Length: 142
Image 1 (cartoon, rainbow, N blue to C red):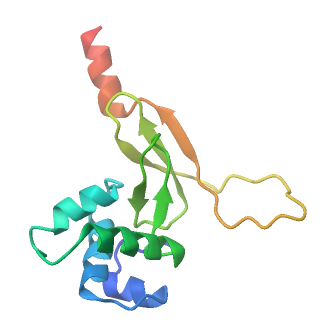
Image 2 (image 1 turned 60 degrees about the horizontal axis):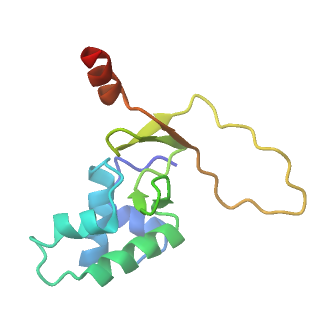
């Protein structure tokens, strides 16, 4: 379900989350910033405008958004949790050169093997490699 054009409060309500000021701000940040931010990055961006915002509130809000299906928790980068407000079907590329995380648009959903007796609740496609910009810099230096 693509929600990038949606209003943050509407997304929260659809996912059964009460839209407090802090929750709307965090969801809005995820929808507007396609950088797959960490909790620290979200806090750092929002705290100057919201002096009463705490890191704990940001962490708790992000966990709630993931639990309710309003955001995805990405563990593509070793030792780092990132978050994505785009819940449409897509994959991610982790650039081993610059550390950036980029969306990979999929023409079709990959077919999964049968897993009899198991219930799949989430699937994430992660790739590691070098992003377009780093590859371009690499080829210019050679």
